[in-house]
Each structure stands twice: as C-alpha cells, then as structure tokens.
Amino acid sequence: MSEPVLPSFPEDFLWGVSTSAYQVEGAVSEGGRGRSVWDTFCETPDRVFSGHSGKIACDHYHRYPEDVGLLRDLGVGAYRFSIAWPRVQPEGTGAVNPEGLDFYDRLVDALCEAGITPVATVYHWDTPQAVEDAGGWLNRDTAKHFAEYAAIVGAKLADRVPTWIPINEPMVTTVYGYGIGEYAPGQFLLMDAIPTAHHQNLAHGLAVQALRAVGAKQIGTANNHGPIWPATDKLADRQAADRASDLLNWLYADPVLAGAYPESMHRYLPAGFADDLPAINAPLDFYGVNYYEPTQVSAPSEGNPLPFDLGQVEGYPMTTNGSPVVPDGLRQFLLQLRDRHGDRLPPVQITENGCSFDGIEDRARIEFIAEHLRALRLAMHEGVDVRGYFVWSLLDNFEWSKGYQPRFGLVHVDYETLRRTPKASFTWFRELIRGEH
Ligand code: FCB
Image 1 (cartoon, protein in one colour):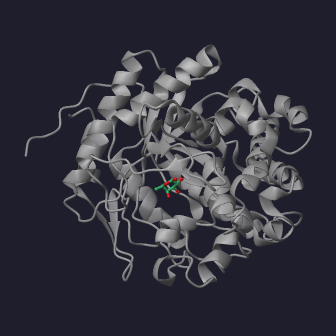
Image 2 (tube, protein in one colour):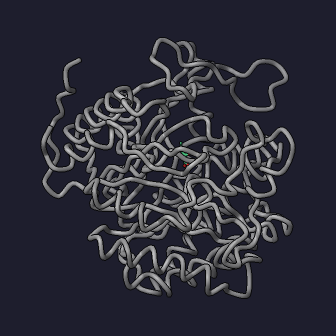
C-alpha cells in the first residue's frame, strides 16, 4: 500500500498527544487519592464492559518517566494530560493532599526537562465522589468548588504549565453522564440534565478567572464537536438536526464564545442563568475542538422525550469502536463554528482526534490521521485559523464504559505486563512531526 501523501502544515504548527488521568494513571488508592464517580461507576454491576475499571489502567502514576520518554521519542511539542481532582482534594473541597499535587509536579518537571510543553486539563470527568454526593454538576455550588480546585492546581503548576483547559467535553458529562446514564454518575434525566451543562459552563468561566489570577498564560477549551446531519432533506429532519446541534454543540460553544445560549435551550436552563453569562464568556486564548464523528438525526418519533431521534451514519468505514470514519466532518464542523462565531472565535486547537483499531501494524490509524489532517488543512485553506493538532491518544487506555476493548493508542499497552510497544502509527506520526512526509 502506498504512503498517504500529506499537505504541509505551517512551521510553528503544534503537534501533540492527549490522555486523561482516570484512563491512564491507575493507583486509585495510592498517594492519598480520594474516590471519584468513576471508581463508583466501575464497581456498579453491568455498567462497564466486563467489569473493567481504571484501578491499574496503564499504571502511568508509577511509569510516567517511561511515558515521558515515549513522548520525547515521538518528538511532540506538547502533551495534554488531566489532573485528577480527587488526588488533589480527596473530598473535592477543603483539605489539599500534597502527595497528589506532588505527582503532577514531578510529571510537569519531567515534561519540561524533555522539552515538551505541558497542557493541563483541570477536569476530565473524575468528579470526587463527595462532590457528586452533594449533587455533582446538578448543584450550582460545584462550579465554585471547581474554581477553588483550579486555583490550587494553578498556583502549584502555572509557573511551568503555560496552557490550561478547565473542563474536557462538558457535553459528554451532561448527555452521557446525566442524560442517558452511559457514563458516571449514571443518571437518566434526559433533558433535565441540561442544568449540568450550565453549571459546567459556569465552572469553566470561574476557573478561567482563577487560573488567570495565578498566572496561566494560555487558556482554552476541549469541547466535543461534530456536524449533525439530518437523515433526509425534509424540513422536520432539518429542524431536528438544528435542535440536536443546539444540544450537542452550541449549548457549550455559544455561551463561552458569545455569552448567549441557543434559544431552544432556554426552557431547560436553571432560573437566572443569564446572570452567569458574562462570567462564562471570559476571553480565551484558543478554542479546543475534540472531533470524532458526525451524528445523524431525524424528527422525533411519537413519545420521544428528546427533540430528535438518533440515527446511524452509514456508508463509511468503521473503527473497532463502531464509529464511522468521516474526516470531512472535521472540516464541516470547523467551518460551521467559524461561520457562526466569526471574529469571536480565537485560534483553534484540535485538542483530540483519533480512532480505535487493533494491532501494532495499525495502517488503519495512519490513514485515519492522515485523512483527518487533510480535512483540517482544507479547513485552514478555507480560512479557519488552526494552530495545533493532538492525537487521542498516546497509549491504549481505559475507554470508559467500553473498558479496555477499544485501543486508541499510538503505543500498544499489554494490560497483563503493562509493557508499552510503539505501533506503526507512532513511527509514522514521529516522521510527520519531523516533516518527513
Ligand atoms: C473523548 C474523550 C476521551 C476518549 C476519547 C476516545 O470523547 O474525551 O477521554 O475517551 O473520546
């Protein structure tokens, strides 16, 4: 098979990879870490594939020096990782656990020594159980607690971590965590989950303020986005697609970028939401987009409490995770975002993109990334200001309710021995970074 030919990117384009704490760290009961909603969810029968959990994961908590070695070898400019709130504040509020903070301190030092820019996500879904017990993201106070936690990690690390992302993919927490119960905390509230979006948006805004106050230089987002396709051209399906896009895309992008919510969402938002919009609309240095796939919807069938029926995107190759491979969806979404927000949109970073495929000779992943980069380059030609691209993920890791089955890494992890083996895509990505493709 021939090598995919790639368009060239600007010299200063930032190449990176992303991971998150619960998916790679393991060591859930070590170093004074408190419990998170994912510990609880994994212990609940029938929630996670085959009873898997993040108890050991990739053991990154102990093996981070080896992982930083891999990053150095790969030659990335930046590494995006997340900080586990329950490691830093075991109860989510109050007392700080110095041992937890020290872990990130060591990781950041190792990255700096390797010449890799640390990009810290403050929260990637591992809410402290005590915070959840007090209502979690349904409780407005969680936004204030989160800002306090952000100030703590910022004060410790912002001297060496220039780039910060307060919250990873609030949509997924709202929809999968509280809306349909597929992810922790496993609630089934449907549209009544929407207050959790507002509280996360507020938490984002308050954390931006808190992080700036302690010297963070670059602050952005990592929101999950994709185009929403109507199943047919019929008006009812197109309207359903607009409603779905309000729920899946604009409920998070609009308040952050424009200080407003989509009209169709107003009735589901908590009373007095408008007062919080100025805080949510704090200026950002970049807008992070995580892209995986488009979504297809049609008009809601009778009795559906949601304003759309979910469909299946057909006619595309599939990953082992059951996601359709649609590189152009990335370009489509970036143009929509740019058209909707114009000058309000700061430079974009692709903070996650990747796929699950098996094997060490993972040609399918190489093609996936190459094709998404081609789509990205097209979007840039069409005027979207994109400054960087982060592959999800460095390592195979714990893929939430699908357990360890899907393999998203550039590096294979043997979960028996925890041995890391770089895949063909690792070598290919390293060559790409060096400008050899
Ligand atoms: C994203 C998540 C990330 C990972 C990838 C595959 O939605 O942010 O943790 O699970 O999907």
